[in-house]
Amino acid sequence: MTMSYAVRSDGAGAPLSAPTALWVIPVSEYAGVGRHVLDVARHGIPGWRLVFLCPPGELANLLTAAGAAVLTAAVDPGSGIARAAHEIRRVVQSLRPRIVHSHLAFADLCLTLAIPGMPVAVVTTEHGIAGDDLVYHGSAWRSRLRALAHAGRLRRADALIAVSASTAEVVRRKWHPGAGVRIEVIPNGIDPVPHSRARHPGLHIVSLARLAPEKGLDHLVRAFAVLAAGEPSARLTLAGTGPLASEMTRLVSRLGLAERVRLPGFVPADEVLATGDVLAQLSRWENCSYSLLDAQTHGLGVVATAVGGNPELLPAQCLVPATDHSAVARRLREQGLDPGVRPTLPVSWPTIDDMCARIADLYREVTVR
Image (cartoon, rainbow, N blue to C red; front, side, top):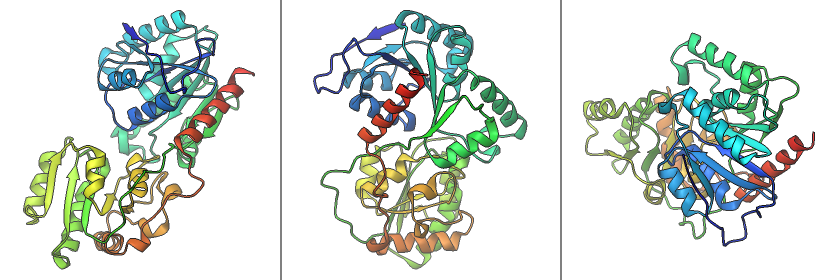
């Protein structure tokens, strides 16, 4: 295990005398959860000293560069649950934090094994639970086993943060947390984009998604074929990597769209949003999508499925069934060519500071019980 600390110079960090909250993150890459973690690290949680425990890699490097206190250890799924639980227990014994805050299922379950008998409050953030059992687990029996495991580990939790009201509802329905578990909805915060580009009409459709079955990209390509038949200027970029890359390439070729559809692999989100006119996301489930948040702050049109937390951050004119390819094509055209119907975030949507302040409020509540 390695450990690195850096002193923040922007005033957001808490003094060493502040109580410690240990964040356990079992991923090394900067993606959805990594984005959330880095946002919190940069802004700080008022009144708390944060220490981040994650595997070595990109996220640890970005946290260190941001001036965060970072510990790296084998707490990823590839290291196995027994080793990860051992590493977490060692860190908790050494740091003696007031709160241990876990993210993602692997860390949640490891924490259950790591801290029996330890005098710490336990908080977890649920970023990715689906109402449909088959979205992430592939079979109903696997989902049931996961639900039983999560119901068991929540007996030790003091609070669960859900990133959308939909997430909270699914947690209650599937995991049956006890009355002693506080469930608080705190959406992913996002700040306005300074000097965001002016909205203009156009039909460059973009997708920022893993090339995986749950993202509905086959429906997007087929809907784009309908759009492209009547709109010579329309083009589509599917930015991302994943197991369906070859299948998507074959589908594009089979539909005669090779000249109008690009699959460039990974592209930084800002680059995609800077050149796109409409973000399309036909996922089978989303909880609180950073892509949808970013698209709105950048002035893009949005077309998405009415699943999970999407209706909480998008108006009705942006929502459509993925399997109705003609309807998807119509919405893509509307959102592209009429900037006046493009969505903006609700005025009550939290900034990153708002999000961190709400986490601080929850921390105070669970530590004064």
